[in-house]
Structure formats: C-alpha cells, structure tokens
Image (tube, rainbow, N blue to C red; front, side, top):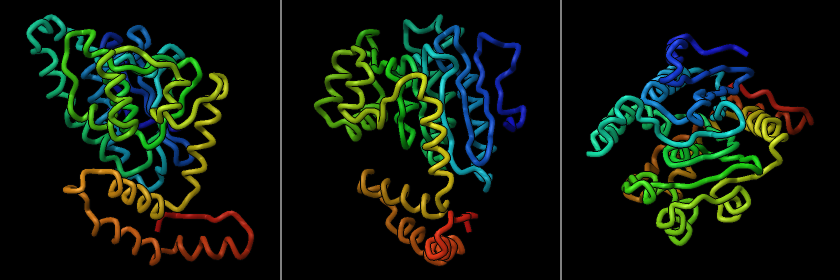
Length: 276
C-alpha cells in the first residue's frame, strides 16, 4: 500500500495524542484511528490529522472510495478524548474547545466527495458513532456495540448527531438510544437500520474490501450523481441543490464513461471507467 504524505499523520512519538494512519491502494483509501490504549478515542490531534488526510485526498482523481476503521479489535472509536483539556471538563470548557478545534475536519468528512465506508469492530460510541454516521455505508462485525452515552455523563447531545440518528433510524429508535444512553449490539443495530450489514468478525475485512472494490469499479461520475441524488432525497428540503444533481446527471450522459459502459455491456466485458 502507498501511505499518505507524512503531514497526514499525528506525530508518531506522541502516543498520548493518538494518530491517524492513511494509505491508498488501487483507488481505495484506508484511514485507521490508531489510539488503541484509549479504545481509539479521538483526540484533537487525530481530528487534525484526519482533516489533513481528507484535504490531501479530496482532489485525487485516482481515489474512488474511503474506508474508515479503528486499530485493533476492541473499538472503532469509543468517542472523544479531551486529553489535557479534560481538566476543565467540569465547567464544559473542554468540550467547547474540542468542538471548536474539530469543527473544520468534521465538515471535511461530512462533505467528502467520495463514498465512505465505516468498517466497525468493537465499540462505536458517542463521537465515534457520529463519525460512522457520516459514512455512506456501515459494515459491522458481530462483536460490535453502539451507543450514545451522553445522558449517563450529564451531557447534552449535539443537534447534528441527533438529526443523523433520526434520519437514519427514525425518531422512536433515536429516542431509545439517546434517552437511555445504553448500548445495543450488532444484531439490534442492523435490525433498526443503524448499520447496513453485520458479518462474522473474521470476515469483516474481506467483506469491506470486496464492497469497496465493487464501488471503486463503478463509474465515478455516476457514483457522484447517485450520492447527490440521495442527499437531495433525504436532506433538509431548504438546503437541497436540485441544479447540482441535474448537472451531475447531465455530466454522466456526456461522459466517456457512459459510452464505455454501453460498449462494455455489448462486448460482454468488464468496463474500464476513468472518471471522465
């Protein structure tokens, strides 16, 4: 695999800050939250490294899909790690600082122009779940657990996470998760629609690789148009950009990939899409 440029990593010697490991192979980018001693809880340094990675990858024409995962088998991410700022958590200053410093990379993830898959094993909690909800698809191992423990910590829950949960699982299931603060297992998560698929833990990596390759092999302009159409169908009506969707569809029909797709179908061979 080809690693991202060095600026995409938190300093390797600062293990307390955690790090983000980024690599690309055959059009699939893999981003790993590497903070296993804290169950991959996300520090500000990790968010900044994630932001630099996404910034450097955003305009890479060879990149087709991104996979997010956690280091090891214990956790995708157990939530936010306030680090040294935790000394101020009693008055909420640490959370305000964390929110302010991580806002830009969170926006980069939310608006990333390639499909994102969350590969989840172990616990996926709080901010970690919010990250997974930003992905287009969530594939989980059978040992996974999900939850938003804010009420058990005396905390409020951000409106973005609440909106994502309600949109995905409906208000009744979102209330159950948020008002109880309890964890649910992978079987319940797939039942309510929180994740797309649950597989045996030993099959998780291969399943996600196969899924990523399937998406990567599709026409990039068509994938972009589909994602925009889904956003239009499910997002805030006041913020819907119908012209962007219509323009993306027109781009598909005018592309070399459209002609290649039809030629490949007639010739009964796999298409070779180039994103133009």
